[in-house]
Image (tube, rainbow, N blue to C red; front, top):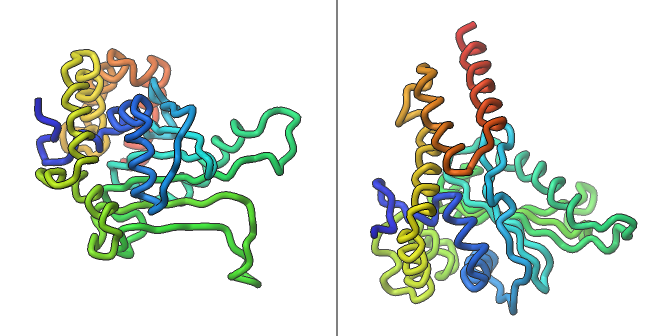
Length: 264
C-alpha cells in the first residue's frame, strides 16, 4: 500500500502514525532524534506514545512520544497544521512533562534534562531556517549557562534545506517529497515499517481518521459552518479511539463558541 498521502506527504507526518511508529520502534525513534539534534545516542529506553489515545489540548489533538536516553528525556511531536503559537505551546508542554519527571519527594536537582522537539511542516518562526534551537538565557549575561536543563528544537521542513546537515535535510525532504527515501537506508526502513503497519485494518482506520481531523482543522474538507460536517469527523475520531465522547463534545462546543464570536 502507498505510504504517501494524496498531497505527497509521507504518512509519517500523520500525528497518530508518527507517535505509534516511533513508540514501537526504538531504532526509528533514536534515528529521528539523532538527525534532528545532530548527535549520536547510544540507546533509548522507556519509549512510549504519551497519547496512545489522543488527548485534546485546547483545540488540537496531541500525539507525542516521550523517550529516556543518556542525554536526558526527549519529547517529540509531529506538527502538521500551521500553528502561530508554537513557543507558547512548547512552554505549556514543558510544564506538563516536567511535572511527570520528578518523583514525589525528590530534589529538583534530580530533574533530568529535557529536550522538546517539534517537527514542523511549516515554518514555525518565519525565518526560513531548517532548525531553530531555543534555550533560556540571562539578558544581563547572554553567554552564561542558566542551567535549567531545558531546550526546545523546532525543525522546519519548509526551510532552506541547504543550510541543514545532510541527514536532517534528507529526513525533512522525505516528509514532503515522494522519492526522497530512495538513497537513504534509514528512510527506506521507515517506509517499510509504514507499509507493514498499513496491512492492519484497524491501524489504517486510525490513520485515515487522523487525516480527516487534519483536513477538519484546515477547513478544506468540510464546511465548518455546517454542524453535521463537524459531527461526522468527530464521530469518526471517537470510533477510531482517538477522542473520548466527552472530548468530542468539548471540541464541538469550542468550535460553536468560536463561530458565534466571529459572527458578533
